[in-house]
Figure 1 (cartoon, rainbow, N blue to C red):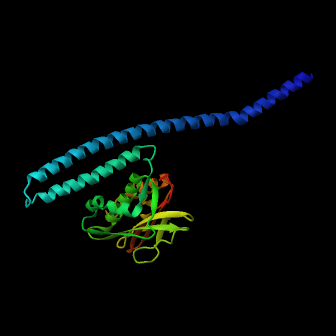
Figure 2 (figure 1 turned 60 degrees about the vertical axis):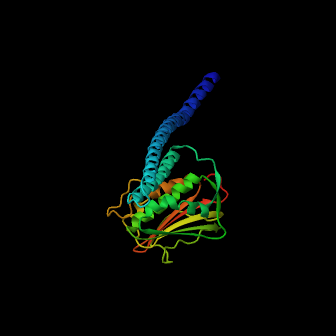
Length: 286
């Protein structure tokens, strides 16, 4: 009789444990299968990005070489020289975008390098010029000059997209200011070009540590209130054709998140925008 009681207890306890733990095990197995499927999809997307970037880079190289050859065949005073130089600048920008596309398809960052952020941003001016048109660009580097250990391609991606976003808001004329500084401790309160606080603010900024801050400001046009919550969404498109699309700021936000950094965006009605990118100084992850 005693053995029957013990056997019954074992069966009851076993059934209870099965009720408690089997569904969890099944859920874990399903979650693992979903993660595996997502990983396979990401690998496939990365390969497609890489191949597309490679093909695009090859085509741009052919275009640039032909532009150089045409430039050599024209006389020094030929009116077509200006067009060939514009083709060269556009292909240089396209090549940079192709590298960004290749980087977005990689599952890991490029090997980290030491980046003097002020010099780095100045060196990007030839790539930024085709984006600007008649818009002026002013770059200021504060002391001490920030040095970051990270992915140069990712920093290039962030700066290009911040300037492009500001340019799309401005229209045909205006000024974009780029400020590169070192921040110790909590990040300073955000300000627009007029020195006042923004009307709207989104994103995060560091509360401690040592950071490189790249702030891109324009003082003319802000995001309207109804659009502001959406402007970092990839699918957002400005309804009035001012402000472009959300892909630039979404790219910046995601690139900084991968680098362990921060992104903060401020906007004021009729007073412009200030977009801030933060990299932790000495961080090899970015």
